Length: 80
Image (tube, rainbow, N blue to C red; front, side, top):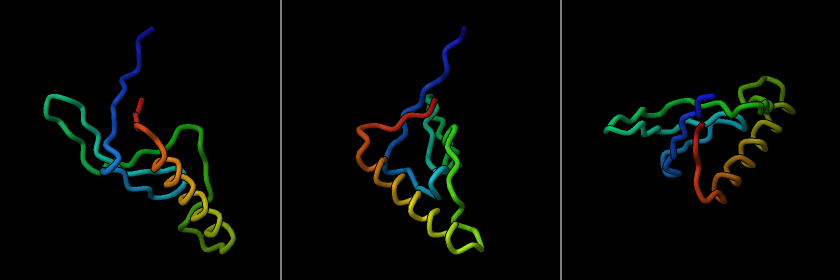
């Protein structure tokens, strides 16, 4: 079985869009950097912040704030 690639993400390049999506720069090595890539978190589904439903929007922003808090506390962030 092959091993998945793992990439470290610089925390200063992470922009949290909502509770299950971030945008970040991904350093592939060999001076190849993918800028502002949209990344969805696996097996996570949060309420949308672009909803017309006020309650869903409120919950979406709460999920976004929680993800920001989790990432702020993380020692390192990786993609696999």
